[in-house]
Image (tube, rainbow, N blue to C red; front, side, top):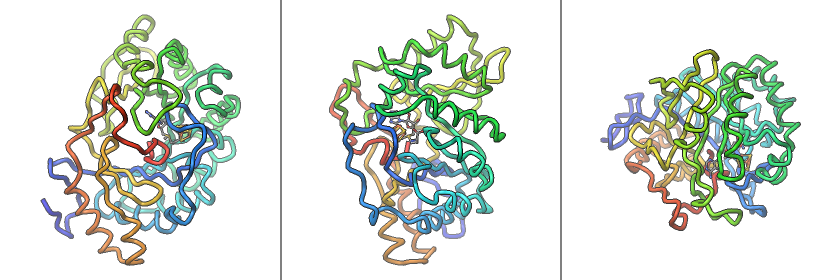
Length: 335
Ligand code: SAM
Ligand code: SF4
C-alpha cells in the first residue's frame, strides 16, 4: 500500500504501523563487547557518517510521518562529539512523545544531567555482570566502577524507569541472573535479559554453544522470585513480568525462542544513513544518498521513507547453527 503524502502514518505491506525509529549515531565505541564487536574493528570513515544536521533532518521527517519514539544508539552514542546538540534538536520535535537513549554508561557520570536538560526522557544501560573481572572479560576493556558511577548519576539526576539491558551467555554470566535482578530491585531499575543475536562474525565464542534461552533464565529466576506475567508492551519484542513486592519489571527479548516479528513497529537507521527495515535482514534504503543528492528537500526524503515501507520484510531468519546471514555487527546496526 503506498502512503498518501497527507497521511501521517507509516504502514508496511503486512499492515504493521511503524512509529518507532532507532538511530545509530556512530559505530565507534569505547568498549568491545564480545557478542557485539571483534577485538580489532575497522570503523566507518567520518565522511561517510551522517552529520548531526542530517540526523536531525531525518529525525524530523520521521516525526512528521507518525514516528512517536526515537531511540539514540550506536556504537556508543555518548562518544559522538556534540551529541547533545542532536538530542537538543530532536527533543524539540513536536510530534515526538519520547526521546530515549541506549548507552554503556561509561560517560554517563558527567553526561546524565546534560541528557536530562536536552530532553532525553529515558535511558537504557547495558550491564552484563556485577563482577569487575567478568565485566572486563565480556566488554574486553570496560571498567565496571565507572559504569556503576554512571548508573548512580542517572538515578541521582532523576531519570525514571532506567532499564538495564543484559545479554546472557552460558558459562560467562548465566549464573548472575538472580544477582542482577536483586541489583535492579535494590536500585529501583527495570531489567531486560536478551538472547544473543547472530550479527556479524564472531571469533570469541561459538554462538550456539553459549546460547542460554530466556526460558532457562526464567526458570532460574523462579527459584527465587515470583514472576507475574503482564500484558504490558512497549510495542516491541520484550515480554514483561512484575514482582509482587517491588517496582522492578523484568523483560525478556528472545529472538530465538519467541519470534517477535508479527508486532514489529520499528525501523533502524545506521550511522551511514542506511534505513534498515529489519534487524535480521538486509533490506534497506539509502537515506544518506537522498539527503545529500537533494539537500533540504523534505518531500524527497519522506517519499524515500514511504517507499522503504514496501520492502520491510515479514520477519528475521536467525539461525544460531548456520553461518551468520547478516554480516554487519550490532554496533553498526544500532541495537
Ligand atoms: N553502546 C550502547 C550499549 O551497549 O548500550 C548502545 C549500542 S549496543 C549495540 C545496544 C544493545 O545491543 C546493548 O544492550 C547490547 O548489549 C546489545 N547487543 C549488542 N550485540 C548484541 C548481539 N549480538 N545480540 C544481542 N544483543 C546485542
Ligand atoms: Fe559498545 Fe554497546 Fe557494542 Fe558493547 S554492546 S561494544 S558497549 S556498542
